[in-house]
Length: 213
Image (cartoon, rainbow, N blue to C red; front, side, top):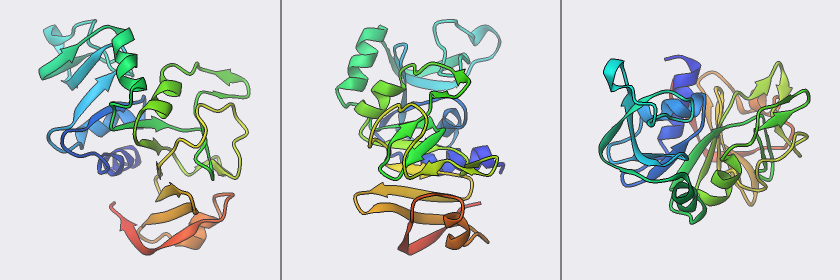
């Protein structure tokens, strides 16, 4: 399994039957391949019940995910306008959202929409990180060797103190009131090696586990 799918599968392990989940672009969009039965996926443009990618005549412009890819709605899907969609987000009805990240701070601040010389646009992420009951970030641990988990974000924030879990290609980290807790490491990777790649001091969990490869 390649890195992207491994991260997506681990992030999907946080889902449970009955959850309504919103997925961001990139690695997060792969999570629906690994979700347990009974999880429903939400799109900001107005649908709960995102199904598999559409092919041929199944492709309908109205049904697009965060990547702009066409999908087939699941049986029982619900369709509504974007205003009601964001009301669902803001009212706390989403169990979780999975987003990519440029930087995460030791307090759980997230920066994922702008960096020097490149500004993509925040989109619905600001609402998602404040409205979803659980925020999961999937990202590589470093960017060209530079830490992405920092004492304080240097890029513009998407949300403050909003991240619950960070899933990387090398480890899983929880954001807690006591600090960043290292929960899992990839087989063959030591906590000391992870620590050298992040700025904040990590708390190593007593029950540190091996991340599934």
